[in-house]
Image (cartoon, rainbow, N blue to C red):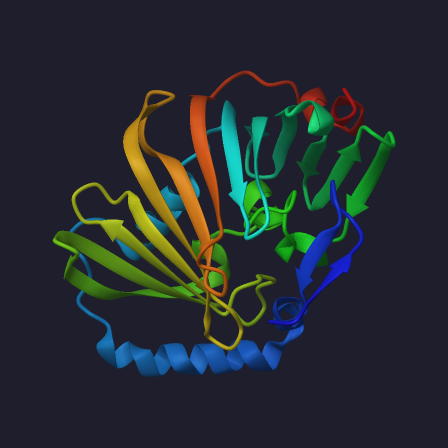
Length: 275
């Protein structure tokens, strides 16, 4: 995988140029769509429960409400180091979010703000605010295996992908439903294919597989520790493992969440970013 270190972000970022290339490659999207149509011969009957669109929306909205506030720990493990970040986050609607690092001390105050289609990072050590272009949504956040798009969630599967149920049955001893998503030609997304697996009993996500523009598996996100969080039954631990570095991982463990709070729009401002 071709990578390099480029500007932006709270830290220097390792970019996957092959993935970024895919953002611009309409031809690649056509190949993906053709593959999806061929795969259609394997499509199974519609689930008797929720329709695929409803399931995709539920998964995209897992940690959303009209607004939300929560705290979490992100533990990043690479071949050379492991570190944990404690993070506080707020969101309002579908286009406002703010994340601020609480610990460790050397990272404290680093923050990421999204308002509309604009994203900024605040670097407290140098007291600088850096605006990110949308093309950087595929880049790593704080050296983790999550991208900026994961954290501020710019895209929605039901809006940006064509999708169909492609498997319904038992896997690993559990009744599951798989939905395969192929990006729409006009969609600005970073993946060539996304495969979502949910439990048929509760439609909560079990696994999401992300494929690059060559339809090679790039990473897998699994969901664990289902329980109450902010009054909802949700997975409380998200684990991402890159396909080319299976010994590495990023684990997000939610500590607390609250939904549908009264949040002032001023919270999602550049002035607030620097606090």
